Length: 266
Image 1 (tube, rainbow, N blue to C red):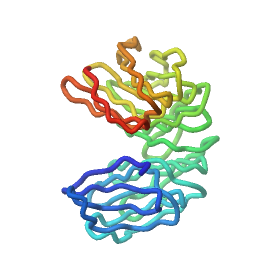
Image 2 (cartoon, helix red, strand yellow):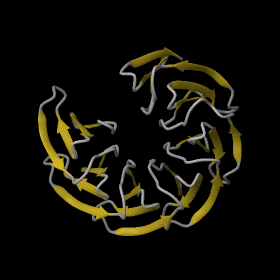
Image 3 (cartoon, rainbow, N blue to C red):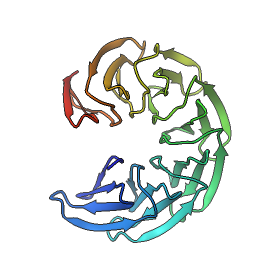
């Protein structure tokens, strides 16, 4: 399993290398599965009675979460490995064809698309009137979520394959050079950035109580001060970290490709 599961209405939804999206109960009983034509690395999203998921076959699928029946699909020109984001009746998705798409969440009708200069593998958060898109061309784009017009872009030194997160009028993301950024959401001005870390930053960051947590491909999870970028601590695991951290009052939980789940005191 490459994609992170989605839990809704006492059902767990996840994609698989065997090309299927599965719906199972908490005890592991399969409710249904839906077959695509290629592997699924996209994180599924359930919103307003519909399950949305991308496939490496180039399609975004909208599926009835109760029955597993397809409601509609939209074909891009290449693999859809990014997780869809649904907001205010629109589903936003990037493709490795280099374009970012906005589709009507009910019908799948194309509303607009925006071309970047390389593949898009990361999800794109919506904040207010903006949607933030990272691309393999090394740029973070802020687009008007209604019409796809470019508001600003920021060029970094290498591919952006991590899904950004927005907190306190700041968008946080890492790139494949191992640099982590905090950027003003309105202007694109860099508030701070780290020095190059040991490995590409591909996990989804999380922010809690003024601290941002992120993992990298060399097995580190790091905690940065969200306002200043000062690193509070770093913990090394035995392999790459792609999973998003889960945070409680006093503990950070995350999985590593070394096969372990870690619990670290915040």
